Each structure stands twice: as C-alpha cells, then as structure tokens.
Image (cartoon, rainbow, N blue to C red; front, side, top):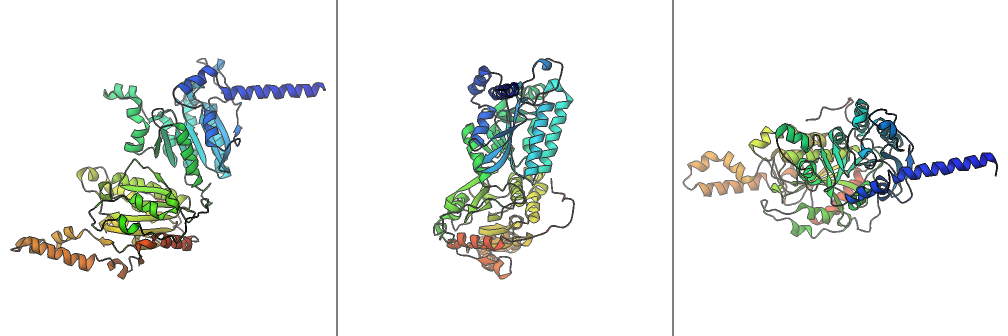
Length: 521
C-alpha cells in the first residue's frame, strides 16, 4: 500500500471516528440523563421519524467560533443540532433536531446557520420541513449573535409559509424567542410532561406577578392543546407522536405546486350511507356527535382530526374521499350546540387557510345555531376574530362544497361556506332549516305585539311559529331561490360528494392582483 493510500485510509478512519463521536454526543452519561427523563436523543428521534436508513446529514462537523465564557474550550462537532434530509414513505422530508446533550440544545450562531441551511434546502427542493425541538433557547454566552440566528429562522419560516408544509415537534423545553418559530409553522405536536412552551418561564412569572406555577401548568402539552390552541396535538410518548407525524405527512403534498398523494381504496365511491338516517335527530335542539357523520362518509371511516382538544364546538380534519385528500370542517352539536365562537372561528380559519394553500379541497358540514352571544365574546373581539373564518373561506380558491345537515341560522350560516361567499356547490339534506334565526326566536320578534296583546298568547305564539316554519324554513326554501344547488338523500352523501369533487378537480380560480390581503386580526 502506497504512502498516499495509507494517508487516505487514515483520514477516512479519522473522519469515521469524528462522525461516530458526534452521533454519540458528550458520552454515555449524557445519553443516560436524556433517557432518564423519558426523552430520546436527536438521532434516535430522526431514526423513528424517517424511513430506515434514509437520513443524510449535513454539516455534521460544524463547530461554533465563539470565544470567552469557557466556550473556546468546548467546540463539539455539530454544535448541538442535527440537520439533514431523508424520506417518509419514500417522499423527501428535511429535518433538524436539537441535541439537548450538547449545550442543552441552546442556539448559537453556528447552530442557527445549520438550521438556516436546511431550511433553505427544503424551500429550494420543495419538500416539507420538520423540526424536533428540545432546546434551552438562545445561547447566552454568544449574546446578540444567538438572537440574530433566531431572526433568520423566523424570516425563513414566514417565507416558506404556504409554500412547503412546516411541522414543529415539541419534545423538551422551548422558551422565549424559541417559541415563536413553532408558532409560525403549520402544525405543532407536543409530548406530555417533557415538552413545554412559554415566552417567560415560571421564575420570571413569579418575580413579576407573584404567581407560583409549574412548568407544565404554565406551558405544558395539555395547556397548549386544550386551552391556548398553540399546539394542535398532544401525545403521551415520543414514539406515538412521531408515528402520527409520519401519518400527517402522508396526507400532505410536498409543496404548494403539487397535489396531496392519492391512495387507492377498496371503499366503494358509491357506498350507500344508510346509517346516516339514524345518526342525526330530527329535533334541531338535540345533540349528536358530528364525528359519527364524518366517519360514515369518508374512506374506511378514517380521518385525522386537527386540534381535537381545543375549540371542540367545531371539528377540522384531514381525510380521504375515494383516495383524494380532503379537508373537513364541521360544526359539532355535542359541544356548545355547535355555535361559532372566538376559538372555533380562529381554529376553522387557520385550517381553511392551510387547505387552500396546499390544494386540499374543502367539505363543510353545517349544523350551526349562530354565533355565541355574551359580553365576554363581544369584548374579546368576536367581530374581528369571527371575521377570520369568513375571510379564509372567501379567499379560498380550492374546490369548496358545503352541506347543510340540519339547522343553519343567521350570520353563522353565511360564514360556514355558504353559496353567497363562494362555495362551488351548496347542498342540503331534507332536514335542513336555513333561516335568519330559529322559528321560536323569529316569532317572538316579528309577532311580539300580537302575542302580547292576545288573550291566549301561547296559542298565538305556537301558531306563528308553525307559520314561520312552513313558509320560510321548509327544506326546499333555499333551493327554490338558488341558494342551495340540490337537496340530497342522506344515504347518497358519500357518492354525491365524491362525484362533485371529481368534477371540481380541474377548478381554476384567480384572486385579484395584489401584494396580499389584510386579514382580520
């Protein structure tokens, strides 16, 4: 063997050792500490997320250039973040993962530049970006350079919004500026007990307000998945969480120029929905679970609900109809009678915008008694925040089908993708009641004087209620005026929706030429 060849082999061995050391981290003790908290290492997480053997790492040997505060003596390869790409179900996905074993996953200049690199690659390649977040925020020893690194991430998050799917997985602490990047992405996953998100931690809260609170009570998974709405999903362990991320990716296109993958199904497109005849009570005041309706209509009864624990009076879900990915928005009568309130409006608006950005058709199932009345709702901005859902629907150019299952009253009927705001097809079941308000309320307003002056006011009231229902709320009233395209047999719901989506598949719609709209905030 020549001296040159020997030198090359030596270099290759040296390279292999350095890469192995980078993967192993600071040592077995650091890995054990990570595992003792119920947390996997960055590489273990990537191995679960991506197809086996598909990960290609970039900048594994990158080191920080900072000096002072002891950093000049600590220059680990990788600088606390793992970046690269691989595949999920054979499709390219870019990923970066904080390595909590190195500087607590804190972000410094080199760390940020590695993330910038992989974000730029994802945008250029037109592939989803997944971040595995487990870091202590900005690296204090690097000062403003660390903060500037976050700025570069935020700018790239914003530029990629609506261009490639962006998914954040919260697997550890995420405080201060680090919480804003996940908030800019399309979906946020959190793992209970180990993941937290907050702008200021419990110590700062206690110092400023005197309130004592734990990390989880302030910003844990259940708080954000059920109260704040910051997180879309919460899971008990990392394995299940990463498995669900893989499933979500299977429902999404790689970018905004592509359609979501179509999956062949054995569920017949013309399968009758006889069960729907018994699912929905005829009494408009009686509750039912709209998820049973969704399950009956969609392929094999499978759907992926978004924000299942927040704003539960509306259901948003990704599913398939005859193999084609479809977004479902549905009022949920089992919670708050399915009314629209501030949180439901914002949840629905965000979901509609996402589907529109990524070419996912929308089906809206309507059973809404109106907007939630109340001083809190008005004072907290139900007008501007409810307008977000209206704006999102009006702005959407994907195929849009609305189906009135039962009642649809007042402004909420308009907002739930009615024909008047641009639904391509407006359908209804024979049980529909479309009106300004319910018959009881209408009679009390329109015939108030007559009822109050009558010798038998209740009899007159019931008479007027019946007249109002018969004249203005019968199931064909809206169809006779062209506001509903068809009144359909509930048993044919699946086949009608699928045929309609096939027809609309080549829909093309242009928005006015503009830089961007000014959405309600």
